[in-house]
Amino acid sequence: MKRLRVKGFSMIELLVVLLIIGILAAVAAPLFLQNTDRARASEAVAAMGSIREAQRTYRSQFGSYITNIVDGTIYFGSTGAQRDLLGVNIHGAKYFSPGSYTISTTSAGGAITNPLDFVILANGANSVALTSGSATDDGARNNTDVASLQVQMDNSGATYYKVGAGSWTSY
Image (cartoon, rainbow, N blue to C red; front, side, top):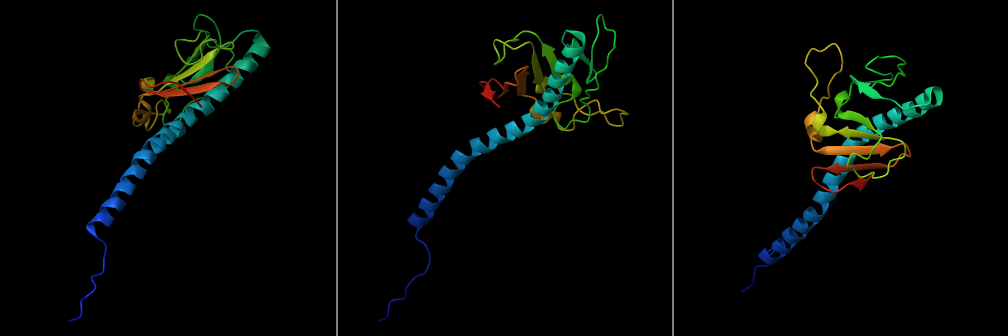
């Protein structure tokens, strides 16, 4: 009697393949998520670069640094006067709304402990949603995606980001 040859894979072979796929997924998922957060932070880094250049330009013209950011536009002046608008506008963002950005001359407890002149902070927790029907781009379309993301940059260009209660990572 001729024995029929059964074609296919054994249960052990299938389990080994599933185990290998599971290990690869466990290694790849954190790398993918980290790159996603870094990509979202890139919007803030680009805006912070513009703010940094505005800081340098203003200092060369007036001898001091920017005092505040109002409604997503960088204004200079004292006691709330909006004079000497330099033209940096942070409206129309996908993740970080204009109110996410602050400027400080101290480290403010972030990754940059000894800042060079100033620190720009983009805090995703302060990002607000785009207002439907608004005449201005006062918010961000996907602000909830960065609710736990923070980005810092100083005058030297040193940039760091962190997600949630995690540690600061060099950008």
